[in-house]
Image (tube, rainbow, N blue to C red):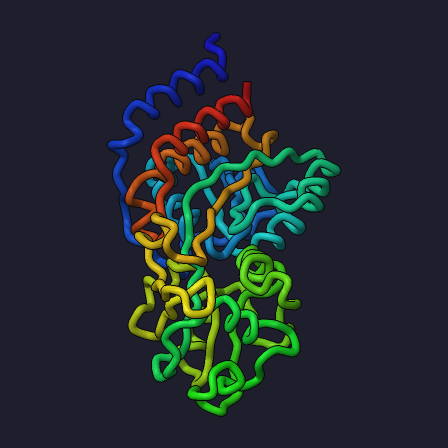
Length: 327
């Protein structure tokens, strides 16, 4: 009988040789193609094996697109994806063992890692791309660029209330804020990296894990501002205005883009991850989907979604980490 781990190793090595030539397939629909309606990771769907993916709304378009592509090639596997937020996915799904993979727009936190391990779940981290966190306003807004300091004024508790509080040349009108909830990795990243020591994140704002609802709110509300992953802006460029960002007052204003995130010129660029359960990876459908995910992460599939692909070297390193996780 052939050893399964040996089969995996041979298959992975073969695929790595053609990794650079792997192309993108299919079109992106940010509305999502699948929904997590099952009763836990690993359960079957009829005669089909099942892989459950939860987590970041930012990473969701990547997972959803790759789930469709993977199922087109593997009709005996059902991959369900659910946009729960990074933190919500870890606490409610992944760490309790109810999902196999969790997308994350920030690294796993110590408390989350401990929670996972307390439940017998060992997370394996794979960086799968890079995002340009996008701050957007209504198309009629006179604002074109904001510094980190101005962003902190707008988004800190007890901070600016009107646009004129930030800049006297801007309207004396109430700032209408839209953003992710505290369970979101995007929320955590923005609070830690932009607001920082300036204060705590404002609590009174329109919040949702559904980034398309943020787009709708900002585009239809005068004096609105909000933030989300770049992929959602790329699909809605005509509906709202993305702000340029400068890291310091008087510094260069840089617009969000895939190129600016890749070069590091855009101040609000950040890595994106998936975390796979080491135990779940022992099941072939999960292993094969993660392997497929990693292979695609260095291709145009990621940029078509609206993010920066990882380097081929990073993808190779991820594949080796995947193999080691089951050996």
